[in-house]
Image 1 (spheres, one colour):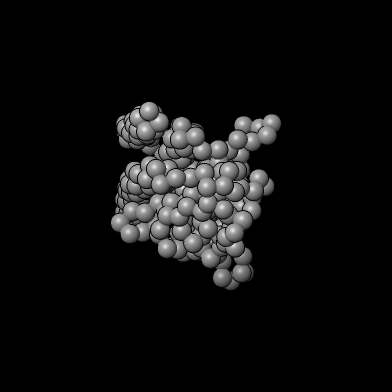
Image 2: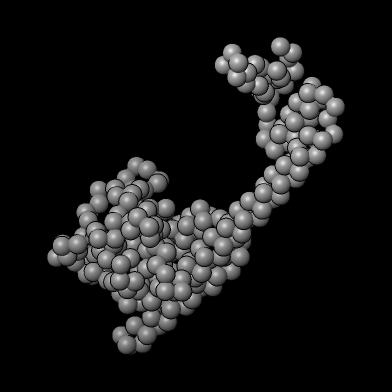
Amino acid sequence: MSYKNDATKALEIKTDQLSIINQFSSSLLQLDTLDELFEYVTTHVVNRLGFVDCVIYLADNNAYTLNQVASMGIAHARDKYQAERKVIRFSEGITGAVATTGKAVIIDDVTKDHRYIADERPAQSELCVPLIYKEQVLGVIDCEHPIKAYFTNAHLEILTTVAHLLSAKINQVNTVNNLQKTVEQLNNAQKLENSLLQIANLTYKANDLDTFFEALHSIINNLLRADNFFIALYDKKVDILDLVYIVEEGINTKT
């Protein structure tokens, strides 16, 4: 009877875990920013797993550091929990070791692990999995619990699956963001090129300096807002700048 109950309980746990993964997979389609993504993982995914403490770190592979981007915990008299260490070097702690090796770990008793960095609420056990996409470590998910040997291989399995899905989505969001930045840079470059061509044509078409200055201001104003704008000509003989065109608060002022 006990064996049957254990088997039934194990099946229920597995079914619940599959439900969490399926819901997370479906929700990924609607999460467009990293902030939304991390918030969902900590509040909806990890919380449903029954974990009481979770922090997500993103890796800065140039500085060799992990930077906290989201956290969840059962805090006293407050809703939001923040880990004490916001930045952790790759050479520090269990999280740093996971980021360095790219391998997940379960620590049954952190008091016996010299790498453990005590938080404002010291834990007894820890589960840490890397966020990896195409062999590149993007960060880590770090979970702690006040009970020794709390985390199981089943916890490791499902959190690893979550990490795989999260890593792929992080890469997708970063790719889209980089693409948008590239498009914006190309658009700005095109605007600059067009403005330079307009200025070049203006040097031939303008009949007087006043017309040239006004047209030049208009061209530059299309690139960036120039409510305050002036043009000065340098007089070598007397070594001074002569202000020949002034716009203050959008109003043209003759000097």
